[in-house]
Length: 175
Image (cartoon, rainbow, N blue to C red):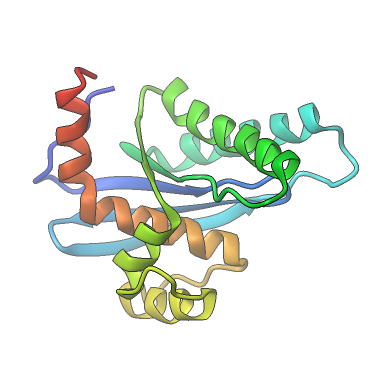
């Protein structure tokens, strides 16, 4: 799972995990230039049991990896709220979101929600509207159909900007 060269164009998959909707976004980074490749979301039916919903997320993300062939992936870290059960379930979806790229041999980086917002908007407490406005500026061809797909593109952009330091962290820990 060695990260690709920092200087060559690189395709990055960003993932915003969730049990109802797992957003995904793919960008290509060439130096400071970002190009929109694709985005969408995996939406398991609400009536399915938890294990089946996780399987739908797995299969949907695996299809994205096969279709777009990213070289690196990034996942948004779980936002911990007061509802422990909901946080635990979200953590399970996040685990699947990290497992799928890893099973394809792709390195996976993690970014806190505030870091994603700060990277894309310039403020760590930006709202979804501010992210959408900045996405239109950074990726004019992107038209995410859900906030989850927009968030996933923001995660991919964050990784594009921070991947050199993420690569260095992986080398330090010996991965």
